[in-house]
Amino acid sequence: MIEGISAGAMSIPPRQAGGAGSGLSADQSQLIHNTLNEFDADALTEADALSIVSTFSETGIQPGKGLEKAMESAGFDPKTVGELAGVEGPAQRGAMGPPPTSGVNTSLNEEMLQELYSLLDQYYDAGRTDEDQTSLLHSIQGILGEDERLFSLSA
Image (cartoon, rainbow, N blue to C red; front, side, top):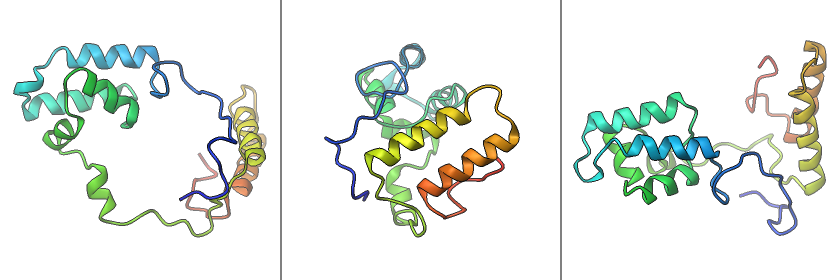
């Protein structure tokens, strides 16, 4: 659990347009709708589920609450689709326990989050040299913690 962050005290700028809090863009929502319209939720086969999962994966639609809500509103059970497609769900991952957090800062305050957003915006700003990006990544790593497994500086 992340401590030191109060949901009421944070204001995180939205990163994508779409349904309220869905995390999906309008295009992604439309793609989900169009894809699921090709299948019968009551007669879903393994091949159908594999096709759905493959389409979502190839188009960059990530599993999450937004996808779950979109699938449910189209009459599909996301868990059933995942099971038919052989996708590992949270229940299977949960058996391994929570991810390790040693060395990772789990108590980010609002100031640290704003600094992190600023550094990320600078990192993705066009025209940055490799040296600039490496320096920014080191700064980001300093905010998040010293665990080198968190991300690769060569990314």
